[in-house]
Amino acid sequence: MPTLVALDIRLRPNCPEVHVPATVQALPGLSQQVERLIALGVHEIGRLSAAELRAALAGPKDTGALLVIHPDRAPASTLVSLLEHGGKRGFVVVDMGDVDDFSPIEQVALPSAPVYVISGLDRGDHMANWSPEEALPAITAAGRTPLTVVEGILWVLQQPDILARGHCFMTIGSRLRAINGSPDARTPALWISNGTGRDGRANRNAPKLGWCWAGNRHTWLGFASASGRVPATS
Image 1 (tube, rainbow, N blue to C red):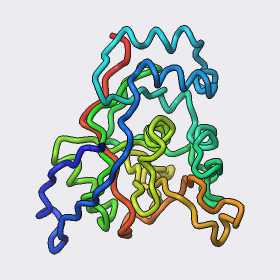
Image 2: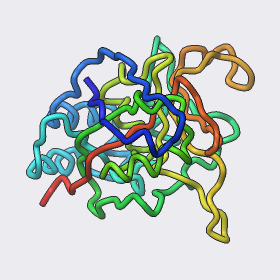
Image 3: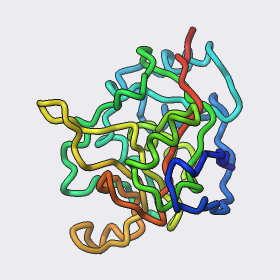
């Protein structure tokens, strides 16, 4: 079950803390995660051999840790199509064709290794109805780090029921920046499509990689975060 992290809600005045009960299967062990990635061809997307990915297990083996192929090697636009919900494949919204240009924000330091692990995953249900602008300082003040969009996709890939209708999450560790360095107003999120608008009826119930404005709140979106990241092989 995802960890509920106690954050100081005084960082956002007049906002009651929201705890959303969720029952999900435990994250598979790292060995199982490796084999699932290999079966789906993710190692090839990440320009790694199956042997290289398996060798990454020579490093930490924390219970509840997630194995991640560095975003520089595994683009979000390719990985999202591997997600599945209700027999429907994942997709990127039509107005986020530049998703692979989103990069880690300055508060997020990724290991330079091609494969790393993240621990202490939290879907952030207790921050539902917060805006990204409100959530980021609260997450970092708690000594945690927001997930990037690729990390969020890989989490859902390994633990599909972490993405549930009404209980989905944002990955505000990734943002797009303009040439002048200013952040794009869009913040990435993963949720389940209703099949309306430009999503199309065919995508109803499909996992969806979309975005929300940085200043907007949504009752059904938490903020995925972790306690830390370390290289998979030390």
